[in-house]
Length: 517
Image (cartoon, rainbow, N blue to C red):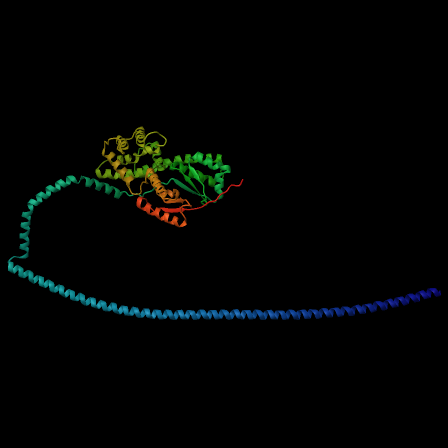
């Protein structure tokens, strides 16, 4: 019993002590939390004060900078305004001076006008006095001679008429003789009149065509793997394809304009299509050839329609269209034939000949050139055969055969065709120099360059517009190279005749080479 009571008392005492301990811990923890919160509040206030001070400082700095910039702008504006005011003052002074000068000039002009009016008045008065004096003198002469002016004129004319009768007869006889000699002048007049009525622009056909590419990558596609595409294009079209460093462009070279045009259209179609390989190239080429045959026929029809001709065989019209792709010394054969036809028609009209036959003969005089590269023989012989094949008039056949003097001319129209052909070909700029003259000029240019001591080799470039001279470096130094260029220039100017200018470039270089083994 006593043991249980003691246990209970002990338990109660432990509870009381525990409760006191819990209360004491709670009080102590609350005090600490209060201190900590107060500390946090103080720290926050300090931090806020610090940020406030920093913000005020930044605001003051910004305000100061803004004030400085504003002051600077105000100073600049003031300077500009002051400069503008100075310019305006200078302009006002200049205008004042100009106004004063113009005023003085107006006064001087007015004074000159007044002087001129006075002089004119004096001249008129003198002229009036001169007329009066001449009239008085004429009256005195008539009184002294006892002859009126009209009677004297009539008498003089009678004497002149009697004296001139013999001379008039001789004059008429001379004029009749001169009339017989005026035939040549009349013929020249007809030619000049025809040339004046028909004027056509001179167009030269070149041997190359340029194709623009969308990008430089297309060059690689046209060349193809290991060059198979470019070889196929050159093989099927028969032209040379020049692909160099020129950006976004390639060049087609051929002396046959028909082939060059087919190649150009083929390549342009391939570029648009995008599929470039040997099989596709051949397909496009066949299609372009068919389209070109249609185009040739249309060109021939246009030429016939332009000249107002009719009843020409369709195959012969096709040959006429082919002349558009044929050249003679750089002159388009179709344009030349149309020009000859027009000139023949004009001359025939002047002489009263058949204009239609004359135009027909002029248009067909070079028809043999349409196929002279396919058939053996001269273009005259081929043209005669074609005219006979398609039953052309005998006058037309004779004009074709005789326009180069190979056959006797049997009609006036044949003579007109020969004359018109010469006129068309002889016009300045209508035809280029012959190949022989061109080659001789290039050889002469290189020979002049090689004639100087110390020159190793000379090359004529750019169709004779440039010569590059390579000299031996051990014989000619840099200073002497300028002297050589000057001497070559002077020799070319004194010994050669050439169009335009020729650029002389002297090249001197030294190379050292070794071979590692």
